[in-house]
Image 1 (cartoon, rainbow, N blue to C red):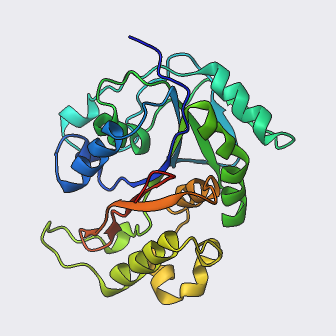
Image 2 (spheres, rainbow, N blue to C red; image 1 turned 30 degrees about the horizontal axis):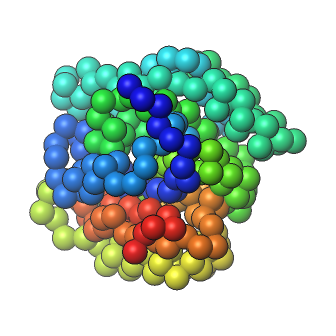
Length: 266
């Protein structure tokens, strides 16, 4: 296989939703697939997943990250799913250097969790693009995670695609069990507010998202699914355009908003 050229890469946020999206093609997974087929192929991916939320900043530094099945109660086929993408220890060291003097631990135990592989299974189904994961730091606030993206944005010019995976709206406690359940009004309102801010490059309200009141409190009861969105926005360039890849509320309270930031986006 030929090495991909080092070309400027987009930064992309995916609303990953249910792990079952790995196995069940739908309009969202089709949009994810198209995002992989469009534009230049990356030499590597730096992924920020909602499901690595720990009290430190860490980066996976192994050559062969394992596929982590960090869920329960799903079909055996999902528990057996493997995404054998290679790691990239050199990229992990580059991340640590870019974020210095912030301490970033080189991790050799984690791997790729379902926030990463449930999306990449559609974006790069051959699992042949190296993937490194960066943790979310549970000790730190929204502004910190936005600044991480600012510090890492230069990687885009080095052929690295920055990928965030979470959900702008994520309230499992108010999840509907019927696939055809209507979305909650607050979920629609908050996703629309986030979408509008992304499109007009108005990041301040998204960092201080609690200003959106009750809708924000319900949409973001805990921050881990929201924070990857901010890291992606931190990597935005002044000449980037935002393109909405897919959107909508599933199961009443899960927002599927996904967007790409790229000079070529329209």
